[in-house]
Image 1: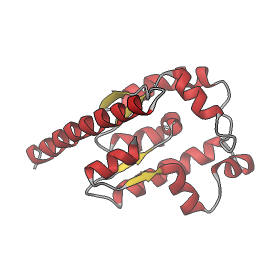
Image 2 (image 1 turned 180 degrees about the horizontal axis):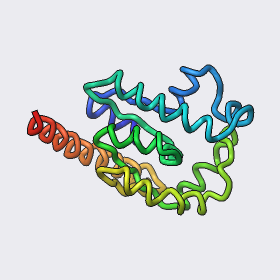
Image 3 (image 1 turned 180 degrees about the vertical axis):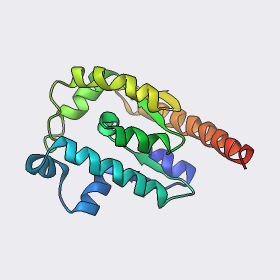
Length: 165
């Protein structure tokens, strides 16, 4: 969905997990196993700030759900406008996370999500509900809706930027 939006809007797409691996030269699961989740989260927040600073004209930046786990992550999001929360049904999230054996465990996914949900709401300037559907037609429809949604969000953020000048 994000790749389709980036193509449709002619924007760069940066996946922060991929960016972390590129910058630090280590897979996240290995980093967490050697260090800790908290050490990863601090570096993740620093990298988000740096990534945003390097793209003053914007980009679609995909952050994992744990970015809200630290005050540094919340602060990084607060200066990265707009922030769109792609809200997915919890069962979709569980299926996604459990299907990736390389991803380090975060524990009980439902409990972690319940803890983070208020922070997602606080950090988001916009929310897009995205049940991706179970067939190609439904997924394409969601992608099309998301692209239209982002066009409106980005146009609004450009208007706000002009008004504050």
